[in-house]
Image (spheres, rainbow, N blue to C red):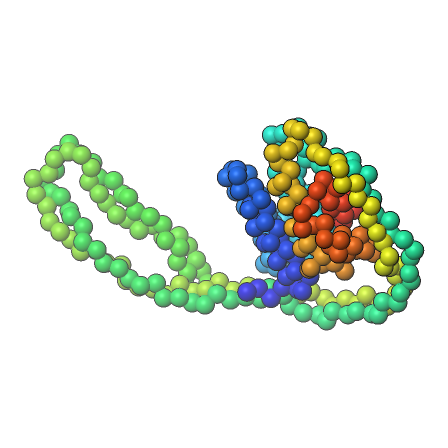
Length: 299
């Protein structure tokens, strides 16, 4: 496993959970389920420290990277909700306006102690070397052939040397097609075994950082007002169960893994929403509440 920073690891775990839940929610459409699952899992790769190391060494060939936190989880949640309605009217990509609203109540000022992260290297990783067994096989070599042709049906193998140099090597396998042959013989072809040396990454240096102690507003008495009799438009009813399931999953992931990364008001809103039990059987009003939180949290 990669040695990720704690917030990156939590974000990685959250994206994996959302990818799986979205895949399940869209199970009635294989195409949609695959799109949601593959895209969300693909986003986890952007958390790999090796990509940041690559960008540092190749400023002219940058690859996409993602910093951990609540923002990318909220962003991907909103994308998955909208993508689930692909092919339907644009009005189906968002909840209807239900009148659902969060009242944060009276603010409470609290002192938050200083928190420091030390300097560290993240992402250092070495694959173990592995022995690739050799192989031998018998092949028939035709002779006295006419009217046909030979074709090389070989394949590439990726091999690494002890000095870390790796390359693709073509392994030839000639076969004769069509025509007629009056003779031939069996020939044994063998390839020796070899060591494939594991790739290693030195990791990326992440300097330490301290968030100074500070006062912060908290909203412990915040409450939601739900309007429970609002229904989705008729043209959206086929997709709403999947969208509500995805929204509920994203909200639960945010609450379980990165709650402290939300702004204080929306942190209180999410905690109150989870405590209300509404996410267990989400309605249009619950869907509306979650989207409000995600929209306020996404970049």
